[in-house]
Amino acid sequence: MALRRFDLEAGGDTFAFKPETEEKIAFWRGKYPAEKQRSAVIPLLWLAQKDNAGWLSEPAMREVADRLEMPYIRVYEVATFYTMFRLQPVGKYHVQLCGTTPCQLRGAEKLKEVCKKEIGDIMYVTDDGRLSWEEVECLGACVNAPMVQINDDYFEDLTPDSLAQILGKLKNGAEPAAGPQVDRVNSAPEGGATTLTEAALFDGSRNAIRTLPNLPQPAEEEAPAPDAQQQTLAAIKRTIIGGAKAAEGAEKKEAAGERPPEITIDPAAHDDLKRIKGIGPKNEDALNELGIFTFKQIAEWTPANVDWVEDFMSFPGRIEREDWIAQAKTLATGGQTEFSKRVDAGDVPSSQDDED
Ligand code: FES
Image (cartoon, rainbow, N blue to C red; front, side, top):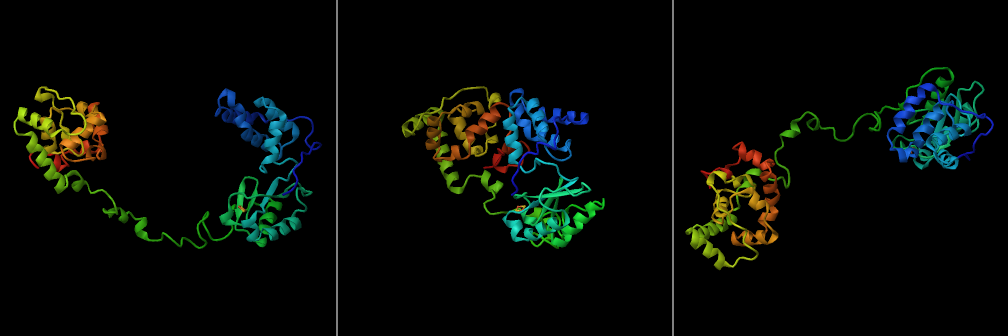
């Protein structure tokens, strides 16, 4: 890394943004609230550098500080930290050569020799004013090492020959093509892809795969497992032995927790509890026998109510696992769940009254 010092002579005493830059300044400042305007310091320094022939004079830094009401030292700190800001005059095309380990291992030292030969010492500006160069730290394109940045463009996968050609074109007023200088697209392997090459990955045929490990199987998921069916049947038998007797049986069972409040309402006002995933016709019957007819009732169950119902209906943990209460809250407020949409569309056999 070169020592970075201000050039206090070359910058003169004043700096002014170009009139057309004001709109860009307003854009960047507009991204930050009034009390955080100093957050725009980097984009404003960048704009100042562009308006000052590619480098930041000390008056340019002061102008930025004044506009953002920052102490000058705070702006100097930013400008001297980032190598994207140049602190002395540069050529029309300024080369930033990455000398960090990946680039160095891939030949950056030889590229430095090219820069010295074609341009001169670090930060020397050629007599025609077209070229200058410096060494910088990693520019984040290590996969395409070695590389340089010239003004706003990256030139990657360089060799001494390819860099010399690029510099030659810039000297002669031509425009070299930026990007990788070998046969690769962006950061893809040279010569084309070496992995993920199966056509099926890209022609849509992979979408035909319908089973994946651990993928939920909707039809099976909606129907209670055989054991659960037996348990549910037993619960219904306990509850559908006559209203009063069922209630008495429920009390005798001494289920853990607290029985949820029951209500009596017009059947026309009953909700279709089968729109809750996990409640089929049998469970709905059992719940109705307990005086549970609406989503709102289920949505309001306390943990003690959940314990009681699970214990009573002999499916420990199921209400929480199937998230009945969250589903009921959504449905009680007129919302939809993915499952309720399928029930409404008639796509869920276990939620049809004539089955089960
Ligand atoms: S090391 Fe050169 S771009 Fe990262």
